[in-house]
Length: 191
Image (cartoon, rainbow, N blue to C red):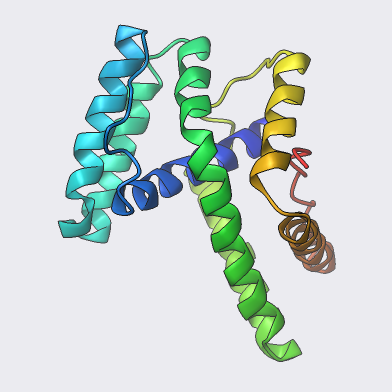
C-alpha cells in the first residue's frame, strides 16, 4: 500500500471506531497485553463513550488527539491496535459503503456527476491542506505475509457483493478523476 492508501485506511478506522462505540461493541473488551496499546485502547473507549453527546467539531478534535497519541506508538503497536479493531470495523465500513453506493446508483446521471465532483473536491482539499494525504499515521513497510493475512481476513468479513460494489465504486471514482485530469485513487488491493 502506498502512503495515500494508508492514510485513507487510518481515517476510515477512526470513523468506524466512533460507530463501533455507538453500537456498544467495546463493552467487555479485552485490552492488549502491551501496556502502551492497552492504555490507548482504554482512552479511545472512554472518548467514544462520550461521542454521542459531542458536536462534530468536538468529535474531530478528539479524533485528532487520539491520532496524535497513536503516532507515538511503534509501528508494531499501531498495527496491533489496527488489527484488534478490524473484525468489527471492516464489516461496518463495508455496510456503510454499500448503503452509500446503493444511494449513488439510484441517482440520475446528473446527480451522480455532481456527487462525484463534490467528493473529489473534498478529497483534493484534504490532500492540499495536509488533512488526508501524505501517509500520516500508517505503517510504511508491512511484511508481505502480514498483508496477505489481513487480506484473507477481510475476505471473511465482507460479502462478494460488497467487494464487487467496492471495486466498481473505485472504478467509477477513478473514471471521473481521469475526466477531470486528476490521478487515480490508489487501489488498496485488500480484496
